[in-house]
Image (cartoon, rainbow, N blue to C red):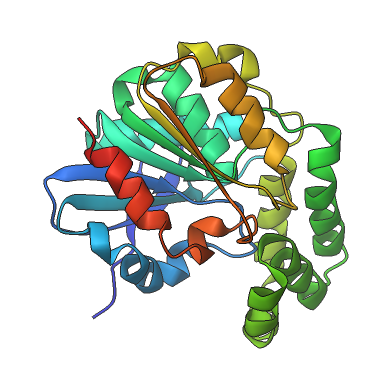
Length: 268
């Protein structure tokens, strides 16, 4: 029996999420930008994080169901924080990957009571023009309705070449399931990263932080992780680890990634 998808309703929006694990601690995962919702991969996510499920009950949130135009990363973060509050989640361990990491930064800055520990994976505190170029190309392909081109471009940028070659046929198969609604949603979410900048507020983060970056990050560039490190490295509760050879999606490809997160979360 698969992981059930739940729907949270507030006065302003609805949001899908799922949860798994039996631990008495709470870990929340905010996934990165994807062509289609990760809700369809709930079972695969649960399997990937099975080493944490005896210690943690793990929640993974989608973006809100009804996306207004001009929906920014800050908007995504504030809606997700409202979802936390609706579920009574406080002082959680929060892991944000890529765009989810941008959201996690906003939540940690603006809602410190919600976050007990923060893990950032392949993310940026300031999306500069050169970092947005890859995303802009994805948006162009989505606007053109080029589903296969979009999935292949997406996979080529987030995975190392050997992994991309391995996944190529699966990516093409997934492209065949992309709807017009998926493309419209992807465009809004992708464009929401443009001009994101929270660098000047990073000193407001009150919880311990682990930043995990990749030297060969061809989406946001390793400089994005290093910029976060430069702002936080004078703190005793900040940790940095840089991967080599795993691509932007090291959170999916590096075999020790989940254990590295767990060691950080379990530190007193």
